[in-house]
Length: 349
Image (tube, rainbow, N blue to C red; front, side):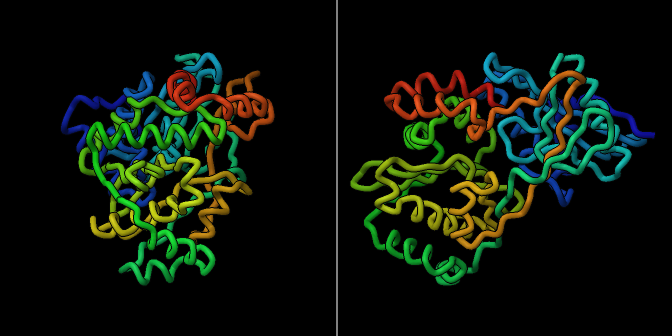
């Protein structure tokens, strides 16, 4: 009989069981790991918990849940907060159904009007919907060497990468405070230019600190100035370039092209065999950019639960009601945007 309970993440043995289960499950992601939920919750001031489904003491499933609260965007239970993956991860349907039902009970106890599962399978039951039309994910194998990697990139984009490789860039890889500060400035500038607020510095610092050697920052400098930077996580032979961007100068210099190619090199040297370019919304510029690199988009499905009489939150920058706010944000000085942005972004989840 399936029993669901809250995980004791302070217990080393329990954590090991969970990490082993996630690592061995074919649909496991780093966003299912306790360390992801703990790092992102600590970095953004949210609450994190994990539910386990067991049968006779045997672990059959997990669902990590971040309780996200924001005066602007409302409250939600998210699996997993600040991740593009997560959701119910189970070895059999009964365990998955029990975890989904327990998540609904928790949402009601916390007075959360919605649950956002960032992955998993469709969930039966009142209040649950399924959407696989908004997002696509981009993953492909890494090539064996630089020449083969270049050949895996379509011709037009390959030409841009070759030009970027000829530029006198400096490549820096690190995990210390200086590396994080450089990344925050570049990434904050990038998202300001897109009209969205930057996440808190503490989010990036917590992810790097808690993941240890399985996370780092790669920065591209030109003339001693950082122009592109990406924070990546490494797990189960895959590199996840997660928070990356460039300054206004990056496009003309093709710094982003150099950054991602250097990350492919770096990941290959670490023993990675796959590159996960993350998710993008269907029909957007980021989705087209990833296709230009030779990645094929795969639809991502998300189950969402909404309480009776409530509406799912929509914090997407594509939401028309945010159009004027985005335009105004793009005009802010970077220093102001990076100071104010984290107070807004930490509630996005």
